[in-house]
Amino acid sequence: MVCEPWKGKLDTYLDGELSSKEMRTFDAHVRSCPSRSADALTRVQMKRAIQVAGKRFSPSAEFRKRIQRGIAPKPLRSFRFVWMLAVAAAVILVAGALTSSYLGTRSGRDQVFSEIADLHVAMLASSSPVDVVSTDRHTVKPWFQGKTPFAFDLPELQNTEFSLLGGRMTYLDQTPGAHLIYDVRKHHISVFVFQERYLRLPARLDENSRARKKRSFNMETWSQGGLRYFVIGDASAADIDSLAKLFEANAS
Image (tube, rainbow, N blue to C red; front, side, top):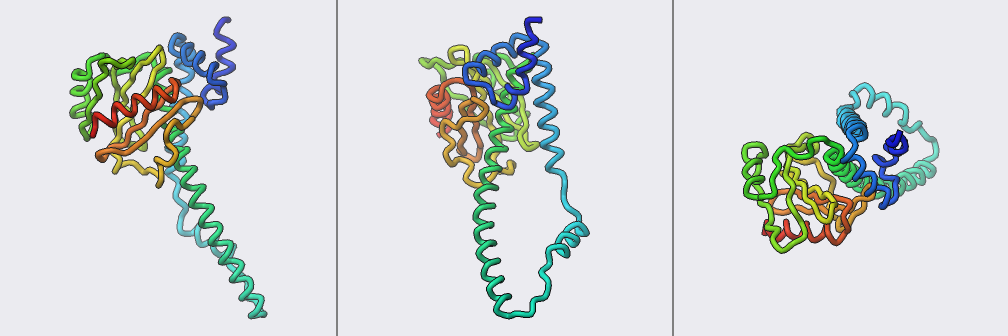
């Protein structure tokens, strides 16, 4: 069958391991093939369900005690050896804390960006990518009233190459948000807007956020007026930056 080669590349596509050219070609195929769209959407939803389930585990008090007993230091006879060991342990703890802080922040950022990429892919794979279909921002904006716990503005697109396709409701970290879909030269761009105070985001999320690459997508994020914005798509970094600046200027 014609679609069989695409089926074999689906996991590679969802893991972001295709080249930029193949990624764009696969994006176009996913939007036009109901079978691959359904497969992609099912796998993205399963991945997000696993991510949510993974956050629910909390070690019990008994488990903590058992681990603490297992790593408790044994009595030592030599005071000098104990002192040397304490110094070495302090050095290791400081280094470990700094490393863990860096890796934790980096890992947290990567997880957030991965979840945003999943939401964008799910939109591309959906047979109904928008809940409100309109190129008029004055139609799309009122549609979200009463659906999101915040208000936001959409930029004027006159004299730009961008066009608004519509919007849909979305969720990040179980927090409701707005998902706007734009088009530029046949590339779909997603703009996500969330109320930041309800998101569990890592520190320094905005660090090096400009033109960030994730799964062959370009992505930008920033915080403004208590809202967290994400702009992501397989369009060029310049296009992502231009759309982001339109939103930033409009919200100022």
